[in-house]
Amino acid sequence: MRYWLMKSEPDEASIDDLSNAPERTLPWTGVRNYQARNFMRDTMRVGDGVLFYHSSCPEPGIAGLTKVVSTPYPDPTQFDPKSPYYDPKSKPEEPRWMLVDVKFVKKTPLISLAELRKHAELADMRVLAKGNRLSITPVTEAEWRFITERLT
Image (cartoon, rainbow, N blue to C red; front, side, top):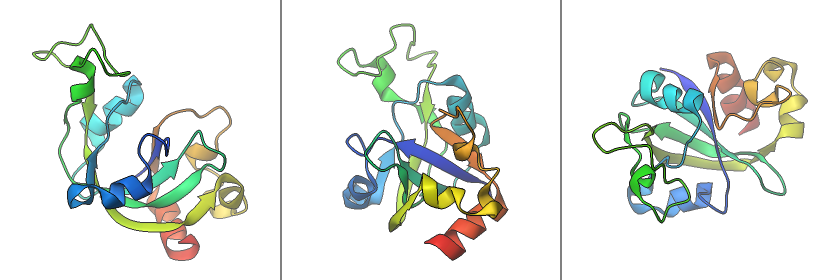
């Protein structure tokens, strides 16, 4: 089992949206970074734990826990000309962008970046690295345990 931090802008998909979704599951659409896509396509597995992170909002931070519940499949937004994630170079027979489905586990009190930075045990988290803009980053088992056992 692996662990991940996945960022979403709450006005696009929040932890509450996920909690209220049918079967409490959403496809992780709109990823247009090759490294993040490769994490979903090549490394994520059903059952992996996910820290659901709200980004690009007044107070960014971990807002809940989810888990990966599907194998990767083509992101349909890449084929929709009306979508902001449309990619005219992507073809159904050769999709460029993949996604996984995530399922709600629990909402947590917001764990802000400032709170994460207070703990030496989390000093190496990728989300805390200067200049990190990736929407999906791996989380170590030790980081996952610290956050889920001590901060949630």
